[in-house]
Amino acid sequence: MGQKGNVLEAAGLPKFTSIIADSDLDGLCAAAVLKAANPEAVVHFAHAALVRSGAIDHLVDRQTAMVDLPFHPDCGWYLDHHQTNRPNDAEEAEFVANGGTCHWEATPSAARLAYDVLSPYIDLTHLEEIMPVVDALDSGQISREAFMKDGPILQLARSLSLREPDHMHRLLDMLSKGLQLSEVLADQAIAPHVKRAKSERAAAQLVVEAHTTIVDRLAICRMDEKGVRSNGYLVTAWAGDKADACCIVHGYADGSIDTPERPALSASFYANSFLPNGQGKYDLSRLATALDPTGGGHANACGCRVQPPGVDANLEVWMGMWTNRDKALVIR
Image (cartoon, rainbow, N blue to C red; front, side, top):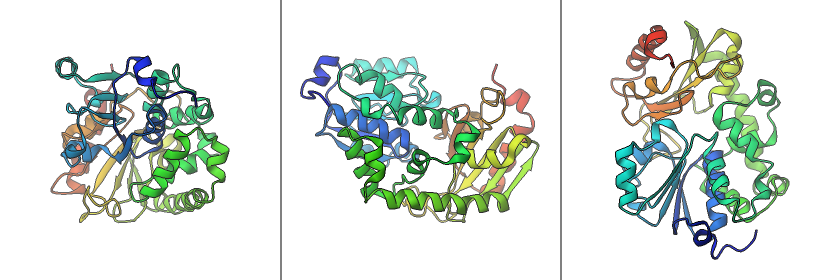
């Protein structure tokens, strides 16, 4: 992996003692890149709602590198690629003036941003096989053929969850230490999680088929109270050319952002990237921020928490915006 002792100094990058990253494959790979540069750093996995709610403020200080998550002015090094997470000019200027370092780029993934920043200084060649898939998954560029094939990296991605911290940290440790993807997938502690993810996809497929309706070219999938989760690829693959986007409702009415095993109600919006020119048509982040000021993400993939009085009322607002999408959501 090369010499890490002076990596940050040689790269002109800030020192950090902790890393806070999103809990998906992008966040995990980004954290692995940062930890490869500083193996002593303590890593915490989180998600956007935890950051925006202030639930992890006590973990953030000027020695913290935050990646693939909403901007936090108290961290020391911020890396991200989500449009709605980007600090505005005034926020960034104040952050830098107070000693922070900001790397925001419209890269296909946050892991790609971290890789681009640090690969000139450390050996990250072991990640070259997984990086294109991370990019494709996070930017909506994966083909329908690759998605339906459901290869091991996609299964690995779905195995990640805040409910499984030991699994997350084992993967992080292996990827930060330079193990090849084949070695990771063959690990006896990793393989059962990948196998579980494969079976969970089959269960999620049944829910998609039974609980998805298409209204005015928007596929609405009600996974709430079902105990399964999915990203937009499964729903849009099922919808085919009948939907331009999808809305997936997850979680439980009595759930909480503090209980990964029983999360609060949330909604995710995804463009149908399997359609020709399916992306870049509508800014779905406007749906994600319409009711929840802490919602956001990309124009083509984003999410928010369901707001009172509940799912049906939220869907009514979102559908009203979608009906007028050529005025309310169009990207010009």
